[in-house]
Length: 349
Image 1 (cartoon, helix red, strand yellow):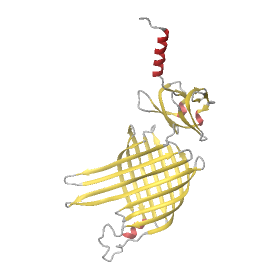
Image 2 (cartoon, rainbow, N blue to C red):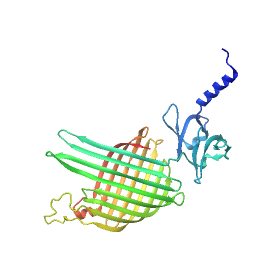
Image 3 (tube, helix red, strand yellow):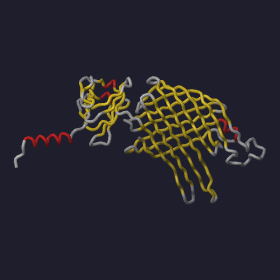
């Protein structure tokens, strides 16, 4: 049977459609085919047929083209959507709905590609021992961030529990939780106002609920997927509700300074916060440090420092040290500083 020219054309067209892929042209002349995932900070992420994901330095890219529309955010916050086409001199054009090409857009003016609106993580860690030693520990935490053009919402929390069997009886060693939420509105690329809430509970500190609400101002020195650093400060209102009686009653009725009826407290306060994270080794490791302090009738400081490592398809390992300091604990026979060393496995998106 003799093939016709029209049949050959159809076959070639179908093959070319199947072979289509995004293409990135580097300044050294190399070409990389795959699917453009996103660009944030100084790195471009691309999914290829031979690797789950590769990371390319943005300043090494000469131009690129795509098969599907991209969402591009420029340095002036303007947002454009279209299919990218190659252009000269370190730029690209966008084809919107197949109607027209934009003027060449310099790559240096592109702040983000396919910006993440919704991101976060959830982690769990623990230990279970039976036999001569019977001990159980559990740690869970989660955080979510939603970022729009001029607004950002962050909320999350954690829960810790531990018990051990002593002389055939289970004894509680730890039970506490923390929850927080923060809304920020950006008045410029860096400056913003915020409203926040923080809720903490710790049975061993005899704190049933410590709640803090406040507003203030913040400033982002760096903001990208690779490096973030911000500072916040403002007034707060703090309310501390204690359990009616201490968890450990021993001594409270024997003439010591430890009270049996625990008083509640409320006061105006000042708050400050520092948030830092930075990725290294092409996003192979991320260091983080979160610090928040509230000072009023007492001083409460919570600090989280550690690193996380992506393992595979969003699964990550986290190693973290937490410090919670509350100077008023000394008035009730408690230690002022709690330290937790955490190893957890989770999922980030």
